[in-house]
Amino acid sequence: MVEADRSSAAETDEVVSTAPVKVDVRNLTISYSGKTALRDVTLDIRQNEIFGIIGPANSGKTSFLRALNRMDLFIPGMKVDGSIVLDGREVRKWRNVYALRRRIGVVFPLPVGLPMSVYDNVALAPRLAGIKKRARLDPIVERCLQRAALWDEVKDRLDSLGSLLSGGQQQRLTIARALSQEPDLLLLDEFSIAVDPVTTMRIEEVLKELKQELTIVLVTNLVQQARRLADRTAFFLTGELVEVAATSALFSGEVNDERTRAYVEGRFG
Amino acid sequence: MFEASDLNIHNQRAEKLWRLLFLMMTLLLILPVLIILGVLIHKGGPMISIDFLFTEPKDGMTAGGIFPALVGTVWLVAVALLASVPVGVAAALYLSEYAPDNWLTRAINLAIINLAGVPSIVHALFGVGAFVLFFRFGTSILAASLTLAVMTLPVVIVATRESLQAVPQAFREACWNMGATRWQTIRKVVLPNSVSGILTGIILEVSRTAGETAPIMFTGAAFFLPFLPQSVFDQTMAMSLHLFVISTQVPGVPEALPFGVALVLITMVLVMNAVSIAFRMVLRSKKKW
Image 1 (cartoon, chains in turn blue, purple):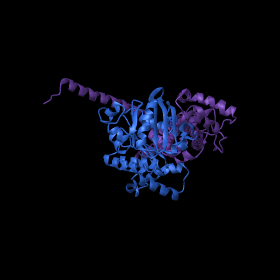
Image 2 (image 1 turned 90 degrees about the horizontal axis):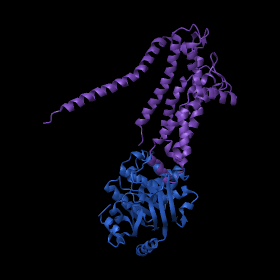
Image 3 (image 1 turned 90 degrees about the vertical axis):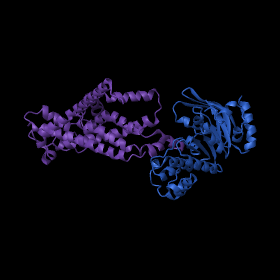
Image 4 (image 1 turned 45 degrees about the vertical axis):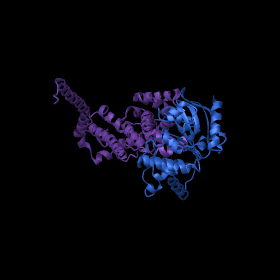
């Protein structure tokens, strides 16, 4: 069963990308206090692609992201089995989990502007990494805010509170903060839930540009968003990986499983 | 057109009655406060003067002022705070930010609740055994303050933990995801957003210890000592014990004197409370999220 999935994934990969594997996930099973949230998932994520994950609520999408940056250590009851290899290294063998997390930026469904100034929000990760001098921080802050398409709106009020920006601005601030870690893997968890459509489109443009520099995993319950952005898409349903394929194939009906066709066409979910 | 039915009218009347009943009960609640303050001000008010506050007691404590007791109470509360705040805040940080949800944590929480329920006279005897005798501090400010500190630890822990938990979990997770350790998260995000709440909570709770009598009477407070303490190893007079002594132990005390002492003591506590409540209101108006 697992073998069959892998071979079909490999076929479509040849069409889409020959880029090296960034994250190799094998037999990943996640449970919370004995309740299984994700069962036996095997897939790989390629360098510099946007990897979409679609599926209805409770299908294990968020748990998958949490496992990637080892949040299971900080969440009581969460247990992870199987292997996740990032750049050739098993993430559970990283002795310093903080160094691992610094390489992985995360954006949550609800924007989290920390209750400090806009500047301090973006400077937090560099400061945690030991950069103290304003002269070195200033360019980092400006570049990250620019890449997140927020600079023009906040450049005159970098000292105002990040938690008092509008929802759409806070979400871009969150992205800027994630970028300030200089991650090579960016995880987005339903980032557009609390953001208006215009801002959503702006952020989507930003993601397309960021793809040149890093690898993006985009969890979304908006099927059309995956269609617009993702190079390859995985369909999760009630804790199982139904299939993973090139997005163009998924949306043109070349599917291995009828459930995928039904979900993509909006017949359920 | 709709007409109010008999049932509607009955319900409306009942509603008014219940509301009135609850209001009466609430007003009843503030009655004791008003009576206490009223009587104290009426009977003790005339005693209050600069002389009363800043001179020693005279003539076998039947006249004169309360200065040594006033200074002593400030010493006792200050040293107790210095001892209980670091320990209590550290314990609250552990329980709120680090502790896993297991039997040990639950046992600790249970212990804290029980510690809060221990009668103050039992704390007093513990203080004698532990600080006066075992640690050989003798009857001193140090021993009395440490006894007060042990007694106030549970409220310090609970007040601190409440302030910490008021910081949204999403802030912590955002920080952890950036690769921050738990301590970095506490220092950069959790503490800056809760430290003022922690302080006001502590002041509010601890100001009560100014009035405690039992824990200090065997451990460091003196019956009569017309000198100011020079260090934490000295004994001292204290307002609460002084009030107890002149009310019950000394013959020939003019009636107004105990009322004056009580008025000063209650004013000290109320002023500390007022400062902390005002501080809290200012902070609420500046809430950052």
